[in-house]
Image (cartoon, rainbow, N blue to C red; front, top):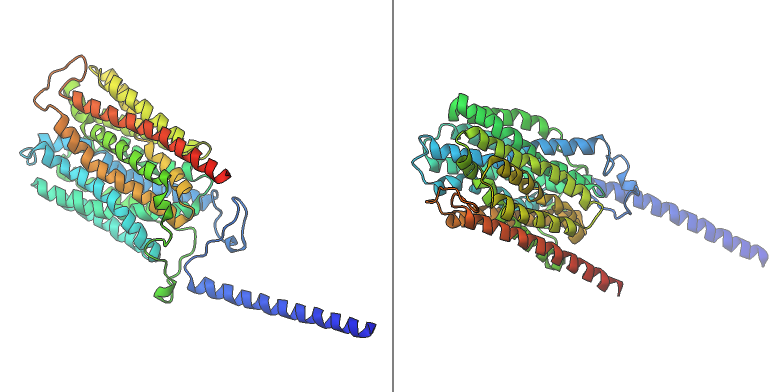
Length: 476
């Protein structure tokens, strides 16, 4: 009897070991098949915990390749969004120099606002396209770089405002928006715990470019004229953008699926994050923040021109405005990695409201307007530094996080069009005299910008309340 029992036990052990070996071989074969046919595999692990699928991949949140991605993307942002932030300089130039000075200020403002709006609004569609066809981003970025360079060089021969609207506004805007989407997608793969800091550095590139380009373009416009100034920038963009593009790469290896069945859907099947009260609140906050920010970025040089006759002062003011945003982009992103981003939103709105209602309202000297430029440009201009933290809280997966960033961008793009249009109607263009408060016809514009900043700070408080309420409900 004992022999029979031992024999049965040995048989069971043999069968168990044999079955285990078969399963391991089967799993190994399946994993090789998946690695060949599926684009990417996402494994949920705790932060900092390496998984078997991560073996051979560049580390998350650290490492040379991750920071090469960040600084290469920052260079792109410096040129693309730095150019957008320089538009206030061109707004003044087009209005005062032939052959464009015959057009109205409203017509001229369409050039810059169209470009910015297209870049913001198209990004969610480009994100959806690239997440379904992940083999497209890199070739598309090269094609878009050529598109942007070509649009700028062709616009240097323009003689009508409508030609500038098509080339610098529409064509450049479409091409530049394609750069933005892959960076948002791949940022979520490269960074998790330090995503806010990385995003702040990348987005801060717009401030770096916005500081350097107004000075450089102002010098070129004065010394070589409009045509060669634009051509020079286009060629520099082509060279520097091409070098930067070599460092903007995905962390996960991408392979084209064998059939369409392996492709991701255009949009996630679970759209519940887009009904999240936190997301809806962030959309409202982004709306009012953008409505208040873009009137200042467009009309700041116009206001400064009343205080100083030379164009150099207006150029310096615009450069300071953009440079201040760099500091707050990085600072806001770093703070959001450690503290609730709703606190940063409240502070951004509150300080911006004080700057608009007090500093800008009483800005009768260059010293006061410089102070307003730095404070408002920093605290309001650095607001998008909160986006990565907000998107990460709302979206639980990388593809959802990228789409969240895209929706924030859409709202900001709409604000880039609507905000300056509202400010243009509020401004008394017939009043160019100084005043103790709200001089040069900007009184109602200052009130509007201040009100939008106050609404932003209130939104930060509401967002904090909603987040706390949701955490309490989860605990119950």
